[in-house]
Structure formats: C-alpha cells, structure tokens
Length: 430
Image 1: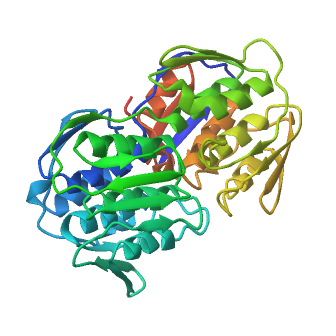
Image 2: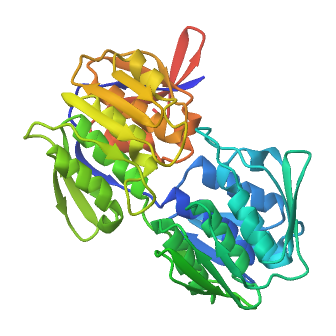
Image 3: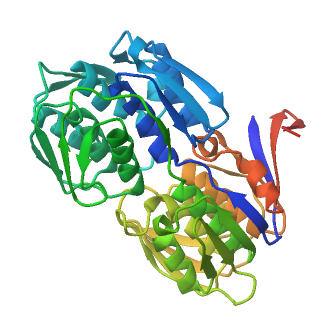
C-alpha cells in the first residue's frame, strides 16, 4: 500500500512552479479526435488522468507518444473504432468528452459511463440533451454504456438547465463540425472552457463567446494540426496558496494566470494573507499578521471554485473563530470532514453547510483521501500539525497533482511517499 507520510509544524517557503491545468488537459486531449491532422499538446501535467486518457486513445488506434515530460504528440487519423468501453474509461470522470469528440467527428460513439471521484450525483443528462438537440439519438445500454449516433449533426440552440462545465465543453466538441451554428446558453465560464475554445479555434474551428454564458459555434468541415500549450492549473495553484497560509509561510507561486485566481486571492486577503501579483506569479505571505476567520460560498466561475473548498476547510481549521462553508455546487462534497475530525478538527456538517470551529489543537492521525481535492486537504492539514501523519488512498491525489511530493519538499515540507508491506516500509523515489 502506497501512502504519503507528512511531518508538519514547519512554515513553507520558496518557489513552486504550477503545471498545466488538469481540467483543460483531459478535455483537449480527446478534442484532438476532431482534428484531421496530428497535433502536439504542450504544458501537459504528468498525472494519472492524462496517462489514462492517452491510453484510451491508443486503444482506439490513435498514435499517442510523449515527446518529453510535458508534451504529447497525438495522431488521431489512425483511430479505428468509436467504442471506448474498457475499464480505463470507467476509471476517470472526463472520459465523457470522448462522446462529444467521436460524435462530432464520426457521427457515432459508444462510451462507458465515467468514474473518477465520488462526491455526489453528477449526471450527464445535460450532455445528452445537447447531443439530441444537435440531431443525435442516445441510449443507455445495460446501465453502463452510452451510445450516441446521428446521420449528421445540425447546429441548434441549447439552453442548459444547470450551469455545467462538462456539458458546455462536450456540446462545444460535438458542434465544432456540425452543419450551421450552435448557440449554448447558460454556459459555464471556467478558464478551461476558454482554453478548449482557444484550442479548437487554433485548429480552424469557429467558437465565440467562451468565458461568457452564451457560446456560439459555427461548424467547419476541416480542422488542421497545431502545436498548443495548455493553461496553468488554477486549482493546483490555489492548493499551494492554501498550504502556505495554513503553515504561516511565504512562497512564490510561478507559471500562473493571476486573473484565474482572483476569487482565491480575494479570500486569502480577507483572512489577512498578503498577496503580491506579478505577470505570471503570485507571492503568498502569511508569515506576519495573524489570520482571521472567513465564510466561503462555492459558485460556478467566476465565483469561488468548489475544487478549492476542501483545501480552505483545512486552512480554516488553523484560524481561531467560527468559519462557515456553503457548498453550492456538489451535494456531497463533505466526505472528507470525518477524516479531518480524526485529527481533532471541530467541524459539523448541516446539509450544504460546514461549520468550522478553528484554532483548536490538532493531532497527527492516519487519514485517507476520499477524493482528489480532499486528498490535497489532508496534506495541508498534516502540514499544520506538529507530528507525523500517514495519508492513504493517494491514488486520488495523483490523479490531479504532478510531482506533489517533490513540489512540497522544494518548499521545505517533510513529506515522502512510502510503500508499506506489513511491518516494513520503503520510501519511493528516494
């Protein structure tokens, strides 16, 4: 069993370089299916979700190879099947982008229902609504596989009943080669949606309005190969910003887009953290002034991101006073709270609210990651504590954080990845 072992109680200091955005990469890689020539994607994060989607494309016949640690070459012209129903597909949430890309390119798709982190009901009904509006028929087979098919996709008007990042991006993919214009209203506005639109447009697509709640896509017949660099990961950046604040440290976060982090920076400033912005970096300094409690309400972009909510919960444990988190996106994202309570946290959950009594003494305890961002919260909490914490289920963390041990170590953290066999342990990568 692999675990992270963290000995905390020390402020973080130094510099950390942020990797490419996970949520952009796992959509842009399937989007290459739409292209009629090979592409090169750069600033790819070296994480397990990227490895999974790459292997899925290879199983379908695409030529996928790593040029270097952060670049992928993908030739989609060799794809020989529109079926993606293996266990690899079931192992990640973003595999549903194969539906939109295959449907847009070949007019048919057969994709297993996705897996990934489980923190609430995450239906794909809005995705299917969009495909059907474009002229496809969809059906659920054996409760586990989605089939979609069409003679041709025709531009249409789609109003999303709820703001959905996945549905917005999937409909963008399907509509990129449809006949005529598609309009998506009540679209999500996250930075990775803009990145996907920029990627498609660089290949010759006609996508306008990404970053607003109305996106217009005029279908084209041919998309040419390009070299494209993915945006930095705002959630990875937010995680290290939280960790610096939680340990009362001072770090510089490099390779970021400060505008993407405005809601996170605003909350940290409200708490008393000093944030200094540069062109592509932020300095986060929590080493002097005492921090203050705050309340957080997660919202679709440009509101506070739900993917940074668990990390802030871990931070707020260290701040005296009562803080309240209102989780307004997912209905069951507090599964990690029971793990923080094992460390002595005083947190009560009432529906969508988590009430945190901060500033109480914490103690090291064995904990587990219940999902990707919860795992990051476990690391942050462990860094706050004078003691040694073991974190299991680290496969969740490695889904979305590149070189997490090495990056925290570079900031002065005492963290290592070990492999436990009975009473023995062996440090990995030492």
